[in-house]
Image 1: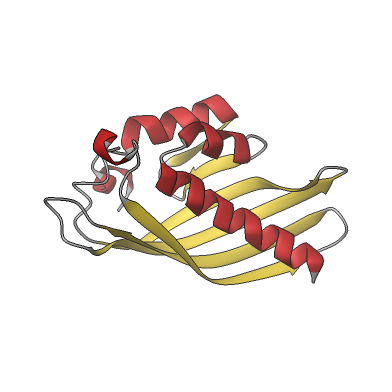
Image 2: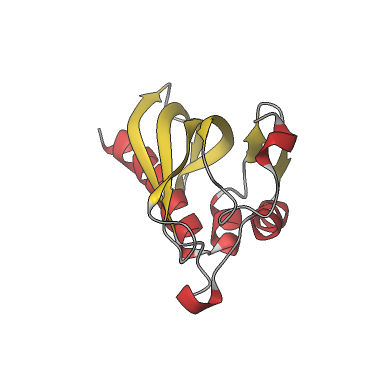
Length: 150
């Protein structure tokens, strides 16, 4: 159970970092992983991942340079495969509230994750993001998500 809890906390830590606008922290958390979507391709390396977030996600300086979102990670299912590998799948729902967008869900999808473990504990080795429902993301993203197959 302790392993499942440690892996689940990585899922929640990712959401916390994104919502804080700490994209360097997101890069560090995913530094040993590939990150992307089924149709967008993937990137790897802490700096590359941080740059993807910085180039695509709108931040609000008057709110601590955060994106004014809450990434809700729901229904995590974690499977410990052996002492050094695990997988998980979970649902996410992103809500946002700005001066121009009232509080509302803006995107829903699934995370498919793979993890490794070494002497320092569990870490991401792969994160695939599948967008399943999309609303008004104009106040959240600086890119058109339909350009990536959604």
